Amino acid sequence: MKLRRDERREQLLAVAWSILDAEGADSLTLGRLAERAGISKPVVYDHFPSRPALLVALYREFDVQQTQKLRRSLADAEFTLGAQAAAIAQSHVDCVVAHGRELSGVLGALEGSPDLEQLKRDAEAAYIELCRRALNPFAAMSTVPTASMIAIIGAAEALSQAAARRSLPSEEAVTGLTGIITAIVVQQGGN
View 1 (spheres, rainbow, N blue to C red):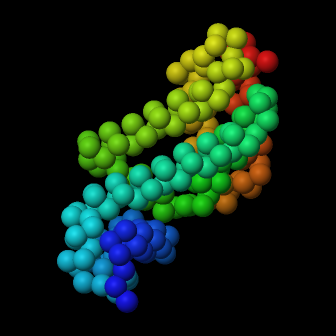
View 2: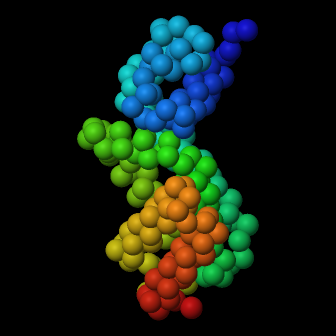
């Protein structure tokens, strides 16, 4: 059965994630992707002309999912500092745990190219701003400083990766991150 172009792309991305999960980032080649998807290499090259293009697509897919989950979580949460901090923490940990070690492989590969690194920096900046907008109403200075936001994201990454490796229970990562976010915003004069 022939798939539509968008369906084939979704299938290839799903197979790529499964290769990353089962075999690691080094095993993710366009040839391996074609083999695992049961299609010819030219079909894969039609969607992803290079391995870096595939990695960019995987990272973008993760970024879109993470941003959508964060937006939903923030919209559903009460408008209090604790609830907004918990929404940020829960959505971040959940997304990283869902992609576990696969995401680490993609992120590691993204660091090898200036263009891919720029994509990562741009996505992180947009994510920081989304979190900052959720937290700003609770900061007396009306904005959480950039250094504080970078500290929050650093803590989010460290705790989420620990949860993904199962060296820390996810619930503990969420609780710890919620406390860190709240403490940082309160330190900025929030309530």
